[in-house]
Image (cartoon, rainbow, N blue to C red; front, side):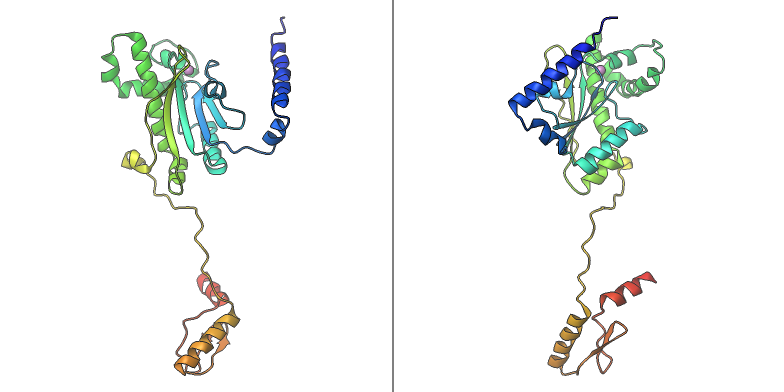
Length: 272
Ligand code: CO
């Protein structure tokens, strides 16, 4: 059998040597960690490599690929990638990138039995059904495929916006969702301008009541000594006499002032 895989190993050695020649610190810097700005959700198609077609380097794009770039809300693989990218890597943009001439989109438009993948492609059939009037009106098959490719990307961006992961991020910071389609015939990306930036962009039924996980600032509670000092100063001004801390609660001699409560007393109170 021809050892065609050998060219990958040889290619890798050339890649490594070239990178080191261009920047001796290249791999050392990469090994320190990643902080990509983009999450790319693309098709598994071998002709649409995220880094190559965007002329980006290793470390710049966090990538998830599947057949026909779908965002399925029960796909634990995608959800894990999404949460990790949004929550821990802090990506600023999520791009769903489809491509014209997508085999998955084409297959979904037929009634041919393909096997297990038909379950996956069902998601695109649903997109077709939702846009049947527009799609059926397109007589040219290629044009209809292209339009379904675009509508599929738009739907997947919408699916992203419907996740509580994206909505959680929106409650705390900016996160932009984009829908693009790459042209195999010219190597160019078509930005569909389907930008979603907030919960306002999706139907109300899909909006979650998000409780921000940004920790509220702890109430600043002065140490007991300071409280006594302050209370005495106030008492002096008001001429109500010196105070003493009793069981963590400040009392004036006349028993009136009880406003300043030390931390110990507050936490005990809250436990009840
Ligand atoms: Co494809």
